[in-house]
Structure formats: C-alpha cells, structure tokens
Image (tube, rainbow, N blue to C red; front, side, top):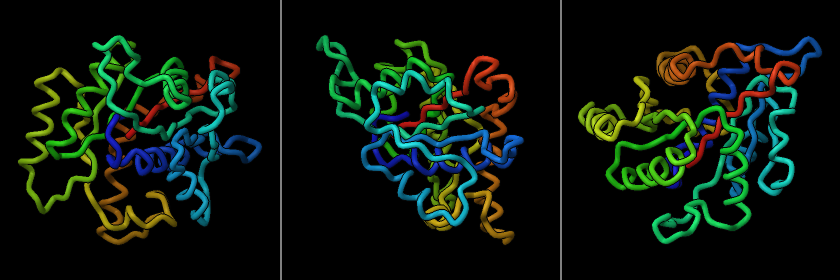
Length: 240
C-alpha cells in the first residue's frame, strides 16, 4: 500500500502470488490456493495476468464490487494478494477521511478492515518519501494494521548508498523495512511471465531470487491453517 503510484504494486502482487502458489501447490481438486485480486481501476494486474501463458493463481476483479469485498475471507484461498489503487492527498487534519469518500476510498477501507498485513512498496527516490509517510502515518498506523516496507525497483548500478539512505529513513521513522531489496531487471517488464516462469540463466535467476527471498522474509507460511474452514483466507493488501 502506498498513496504514490508507480512504485510496483502490480508487479509485487502478481509475483508474490506466483511464489506463494508455487510453494503452496494446488488443492486436491487441482484449483489454486492463491488468488490475486485487483481493486485498481487501471487494471494493470488484470492486463498482465491475461497475458500469462499459464496463470498459477486465480485472478479476481474487485474494482467495482464494494459490497462483496467484506466477504473475501470466505473465499476458498489460503492467500489473497490485493492490487490496490493509489489515492489523492487528503490531510486528515482537515477532518476528512484520508482515503476519501469515493468508491475507491470505500474499497480501501473495506480491504484494510480485513487485511492481515500490508506490504508498502517504495522507491529509493526522494519524491517517494512523503507519500510513504502519509500512507503509514495517516492510514496504517491509526488503523493499527501491521505493515512492512519493501524497497522496490532499485537499479544496482546506481550504488548501495540509495538503498542505505532509504532504509535509514524508514528506520528513523520506526517503520519495519524488509532486508530484501527488489532489484530492477528488464525481465520484470515482460508481461507474459511471472518470476516462477523465468528462465534458468544468471540474470533471470537473480530476478527470481529477490521475490523468493522477500516471500520467505515476509512470512508466507502456515497458510493451510487460515483456509475458510479454519478461519478464512490470509489477505495481503498491496497499494501503490
């Protein structure tokens, strides 16, 4: 979740879903344990999923379904990764809801009511700091929703100092930040594959590794105890 657009929420939603589906395997009936749900009106994750030769997860369009979002934990999935929209800057000190009062504000509030935790992607760029701060201080912390920041789309050629500076900013604000950094690779822009379908060459293996490391670090485990019969799906909210 991040108020700022373009920080990689669709990429992370789809690839975390793919890694989780790869590790979790399929149900006895052959259906996936994992779903990726799109609440973003831009529909980037829907577009990318439609271009996959093989979808390792179910894909759900919830961008126009405010009423039924409250039922997501009744769906037959161990994990649901939600690709969510950004929103306009609304300072809560004005007395207004920082998520807004439109349809997408209602969708976000409903999702956050159910989210077990929130992934907050951010870039190693100064103009990403303020929207990230607003996302956490205006929305996540007041609601008490657990979250973790992940540094995304870092070009290694620019040097580790940018990562260190961004990580230091997070730590100075008391924000939990993933040790894993998702590096920028051209292969990630190929909309016909997710990381579990990458080739076994050096570059694509490195690109794949970032998501497996982040999934492991983020704690994608024990999902079978959260199936509907035992308490419902584990809902991950990822916003840009």
